[in-house]
Length: 245
Length: 378
Image (cartoon, rainbow over all chains, first blue to last red; front, side):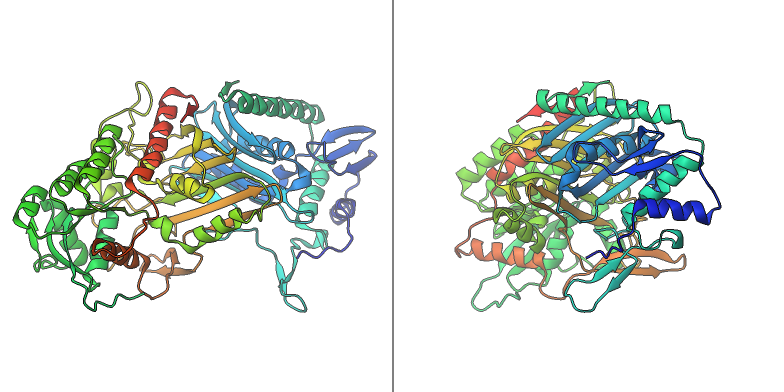
């Protein structure tokens, strides 16, 4: 079971700003995703922008980078995972539709999907001829850590966020004391000491959004596009047909 | 469980080809079992040379009556009670017919045939001859499959909503050339898509297990499938190597199945057992599954969780090896159970030739979906 320290995402962002000697000239606020939201939001001067926090996950970044540059030209990618029930299957699709286009470096050309309550199976044919598969389920209990595996295959290699033979994301520290299941900690960097892995990734996202050149209008536009993709996923499921974009 | 021969009269066996990798496993299992007496083999010269080279033993088959022709073997050995139909997929029907016409029981490989007219004739011959037929589907022997099936049956996950599974392996096309020959693997040359230069007969043909497991573990049949091929990872492969399937079962469960040859292998024409070098990806075979229900989910290794990592040879090749208990072996146990059935012991097969026909139909539906670009209803 994962141990938390009552630290917040905001604590992480402040720590990163302090550690790097940076300050921001805007009023910002982090708003955690509610059940009907597609993702977390960053409020800047009263306006909400979606946080694509998965784009700051170092493992997913590695898949996207190496699928493009270092495995001889990717041919396909797959995302398989389970996430908390309260996160919702459509929000999970929103996240992974974005990641699929990023990983295969292409717009989606055709969507074929089947849905069943909290689960989705989707095949994406990309404009560049590559294929992505999404196998997603919002089935985990409250407090469980997301278990999503991203993999890309290419003509000269592959890369995956799971090391061969492992099933779940490893933790940094496993403590065996008074419980038959170990207490675990997933501290990754001293600036974010005490945050969970999920909080750390969101904190890094916000820190980057605030301190780097960020096209906020593009984020809003992308949000709209991803919502349209989800409508198409629903349409494909209902009609039983593929939908060309 | 080691067989105790007792008064058991060993089953006289003929092996029709060793082209299928699993036929080799069965041949070795029978050699170590008192319930079998391997009498004869029929091997084409190329396969025979390959095996003698692989084992470094020019006398590998010397103690058996060895033929180059299946028909000649069964004619010369009317005492045969069982044959392993271990040729290429395209040869299975002919081999099956030779056996059925002579009342010889058979063990079929995982793809008896994908030609449904041939399959219907096999079923007719099975019924008419009264022979016993067993299909070697190794994923039915694994304990984790039973565990997950049981958990699903107990509604541990709530209402089952989705199952995803993959069966990855290397592609043996470099040393088993027939597997990259559409006529030999699929039975005929059919392009995957209109005006396309790749053909049916690759990973989708070779990995029926995930489709079989869906039917077995849920007790439901496929309602519809949609399949898509990615650009081949191996450009020189004539058949599909990366293939993705989604669909629905009749009970509403969503499935996503991936039978791809996703684990890259060494491009070698000569396998030498003492070198045991197969794949670049450190594991050669993986079968894993994710189950999703309204109250929970599971991530499962169906093949075998016991593994070691290893570095070896002069180039420090990295391997992650599946390690099995040193007991009788599931393949041998499977073979011995069938031997007892042939001798009349009560035997309820886990699945029949007739039942397995449904899995072959699903695979053909996937090929049809790839060809048409549309979902196919079963």
